[in-house]
Image (cartoon, rainbow, N blue to C red; front, side, top):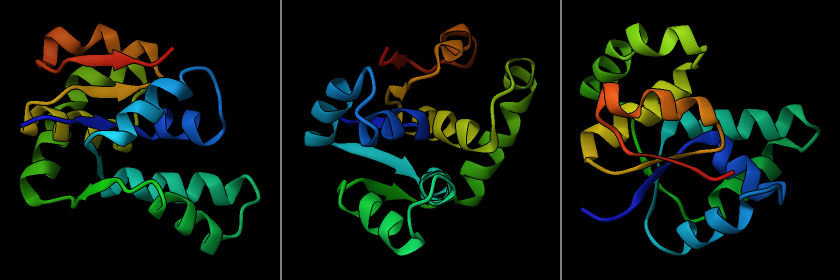
Length: 130
């Protein structure tokens, strides 16, 4: 299966035109998959920074991301990652992204460099955009 699983931080970098936005832009032209947990994080983050919730929803929908629901299996996998991710302070959204990448055997894309420390341990290729 081709494509990449995008983390909230990578998508936010794109939306804010931060360093690495160009890399995310090219991924969005291909197959960009996101957990619906990360969709919630995206909308909440945009709204907390002053964007109207409806506008935040529209902004996220306009990215044409392929959303994957939090299934029972994905929830279990994300929970199993706590052991390795807790020391690095990773969030529920981070674990959902990593677990989805693990399930789909796809790279996880993030702006958070700390994820590189986990790649080998959890068996997920991590692409850091900056």
